[in-house]
Length: 153
Image 1 (cartoon, rainbow, N blue to C red):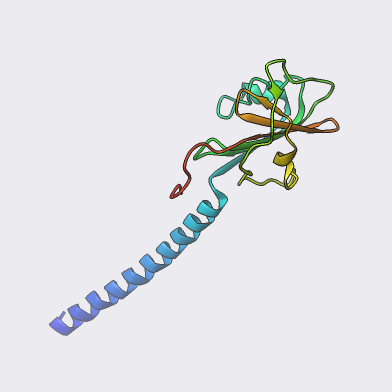
Image 2 (cartoon, one colour; image 1 turned 60 degrees about the vertical axis):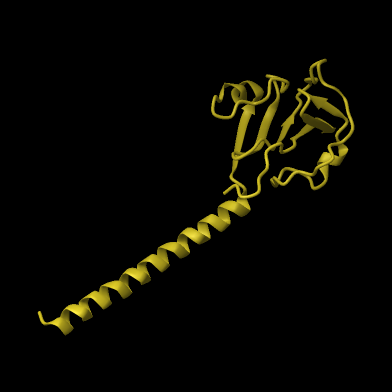
């Protein structure tokens, strides 16, 4: 192959490499933006509180009654924020949960089962960090973020 042919092959390979890199970077960028917007969230559902407490990867808080039903939780995997909902099924919160004002910060997590502004209705706090409210037999709980999320992706 002559000198011009070698240059053409090198230039062609370089252009192809840039095109592939741009495509891959574009995919990575899209995933990073989506992941950042998502905030690294894990969603879990359990039939009962007992089932949720047995999940060692997530583990529901101890104040959730074992008999709680239809438990749903959204968890920020890069921090401490969590929102939780369950059906009380005749259960009550433990005596260690105390009356409390609503938290000062709103959740950044969302779920189709979490009513907008639900955290403003909290009247109880459990484990010093879980803000609890009830609506009929449905219990809602919010644990505010305590870890700086700027740049977490």
